[in-house]
Length: 304
Image 1 (cartoon, helix red, strand yellow):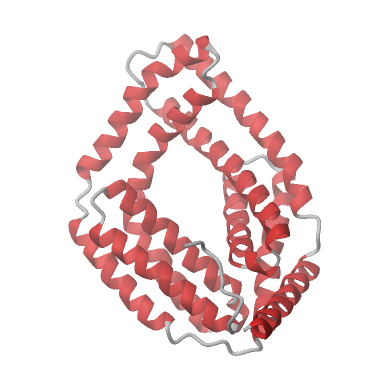
Image 2 (spheres, rainbow, N blue to C red; image 1 turned 90 degrees about the horizontal axis):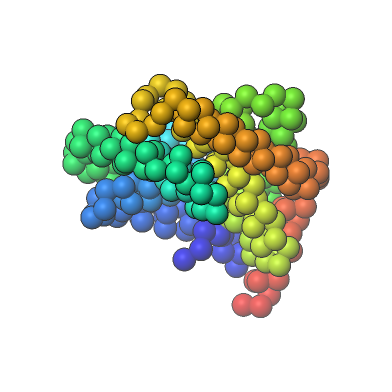
């Protein structure tokens, strides 16, 4: 089922419903998943979705937001090394595909494949996660119970308007900061802000499906570009700190140039696309989204 709010019901009811679905599936994945890496990936993804859901109506949640956001963040933290194990092999495989037509580049990546796989296996062999998986599932069930009871302490449309505007505004500010500085951590932080905005657009997709689908697809592309760039940074750092077997100094220098050039091209594309998505001022964007929710919600109730 898609990650989106049902528009044929009150906002808080739709939020509770989607949150319950994500939390239930997260608990099932981490408790019962046969593939550890897939289970951890699913857990991390779903907890981010729940946190985005909370941010959507954050202005109407007061202390509830702080408590539940921290709980969702903390439940995924014990599995961060599994995500780290996946980064190198995934990045190397993606780059191999990007440069598939370049024979020289393909030769440079060959020594990295075994190196990346060995790094992944070393982390997985050291990970003793059986107890952590059960503890995480139990914690998620407790969050789920509390989620059934969350209430808004202001008008729903106000909570939505301010929540959307705040996350969108942070993404917009991140663009201004990223243009001034090309610092890798700053770009990574900007991507996280954009991801929350992307999640919010997905949640609100049914207020105007045709228009929202276009925006969602463009945001997906933008966050993917920045995610790939961050993975390149991580790969470069690992290369400089490690010494993969079979990689000569000349090959290392060639790889560093290749990766840096690819990173530059990704950032150029990101800075071309982002202004098109972030031109609207935050308050105007929040008012527009909340207004569309009001109209779509009223229309759906009439149709019932």
